Image (cartoon, rainbow, N blue to C red; front, side, top):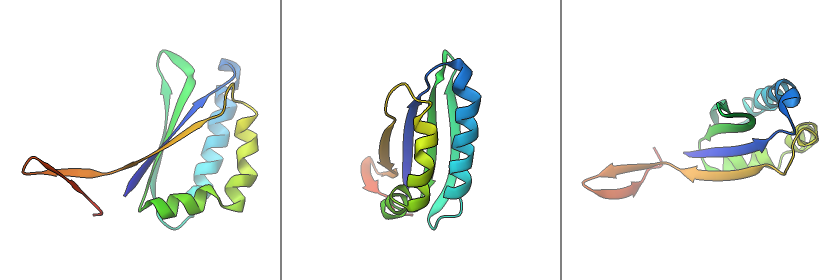
Length: 107
């Protein structure tokens, strides 16, 4: 499994609700994709214009397929209009600890 962390910096507080609406719309589409497990949206308590979108996917390939899909490419410009800088994407793998060694977990 992988966890994808997307960080958004919204132009200003007045755009936060609209950004959340767009993020919700994108997530609704992502939920239809093979390999999507779960997603959440977090807002920084000290700066509501700083948002994290975190999703879990069965593997990197499932995420990459969605990330490059025509539907995602179609939806991205709407959220991009509300950003003060390009969003960042980081992909993390899950690990388990066993006998003090780190072992890659595929589940």
